[in-house]
Image (cartoon, rainbow over all chains, first blue to last red; front, side, top):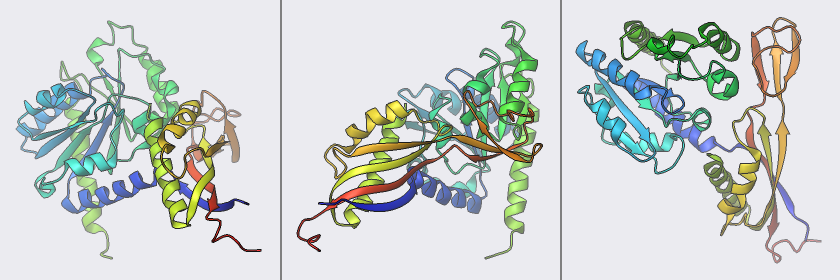
Length: 230
Length: 123
């Protein structure tokens, strides 16, 4: 029996992309600005987010977070200290978040009542790069306790970044962090990315980072409302 | 390691298409895999049979065509191929203003299926 060939030409992650597109439309309609934070484990996603959310809540922004974690609820507990609503996705071993997991976790949440939603991805510089979560902004964290060649080692992730945030700037001197080399590497792999520097511990750069988020949220909101009705 | 979940997505797509076509078995799956797709070929090859167990794709051959990373350099005004470790810079002139043309593919091109004997009894 001769086998028949079926042409498919279908992206393997088509289903994820489709759900992500639906999510993005939902986020835009609700006017919530969604930020997907990715980095290697220990680069400081939770610390940055904890301090960011605390400051934003103080300034009366309506923020919330979804946290992906393999097994524990520690990160969610830390973030909840900011007073903002936090939901946890325990991935049970899955190394990244998928759009469907996010969609499921959003159930019963009034997105219209939020200005910002942060998604803290699973600590991993490989797998999350392929999975669109419907975010408006993808932020890759890169800490000064990592090698300055991280962007060159994980080009797909850095290439997919809208923003690269250098974290733990207060430790740069102690770790002999090659700052110039790191910046050059980010510029090479992700020339389009906005580069920011922060320290969640000293507060360095946090206001600038928040102002940047607010400006981008504002841009997105005005672009959506100015778009011609279809 | 997200190759297993990718393999599951792959098998899901393959099985859906095969079922719709009335196949009884999938014998071959042709996949295009970009060098910058962030997917390890070996891990995917290892995961595929596991994901395919108990489906129409069980026992199918996974044929992987690698897609090299091609960019367009706006400075040279020409297409270039990037080689590992894929530093995002033109290999000829060193410029970083590049447009990615290909290399992130993760796509099922086609599948080979066997159909029911009775229905395929054409001359």
